[in-house]
Image 1 (tube, rainbow, N blue to C red):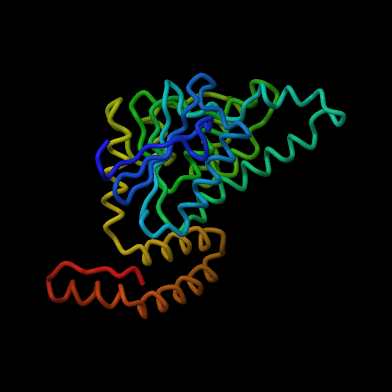
Image 2: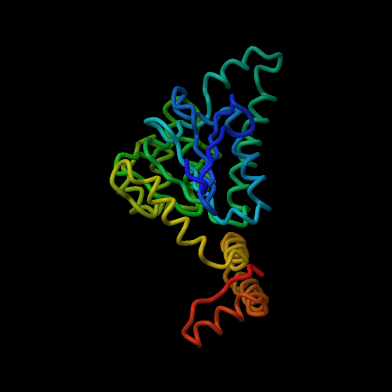
Length: 275
């Protein structure tokens, strides 16, 4: 391990998540291959905690979410959920808690003021597919597959549908949700679920390289741009233009915009201060 890289289990030695710091990039690796990196209660909590810790860490400028083993993530831990049917309320309270905590973690990715990139090496299904769709960008191995197969077990992928329908055209999203069919990495790229497909085994390095490229930009500009992107997407056309005009005005007043424009005019490299 180099001085620029440190790898640790998140929160404790029993955590299902690895945290590695590579310069200004945080790599979070789902590390329960035996359960196909299911989004269990502990996995969701570990991801949420790490994302929250990264939020205000000025040393970290981008995040990569990767996974160990043959699967990226199979979604919710069905054995964990089924075990709670023995509760007095047949699991209702636990099911509600799990769906709420998972939804909150996914929204934390969207609201994180730093780019988040998925590095998908294998199968990503149900909430695992939702995790990929919730990231800002995604790099996939040629061997990766994506699907929302809840329909096959009588459980429609309703929460994954939220992120899916914001990435994939409606009829294609509905086809995946209603049939449970998997799509290949290349098809996922065509549908807009992932950005790039690379040779198997290179997806992690490719995602880190992309993260490093983006991390060289102004962190302030990335922060306001990411927030504006997701906010305007939920608005009608007129409101979106009104809002983004205000954002650009504020952005023009920022020190980094003044520096960046000046550097462009002077034909020199900008020196960001992230403000």
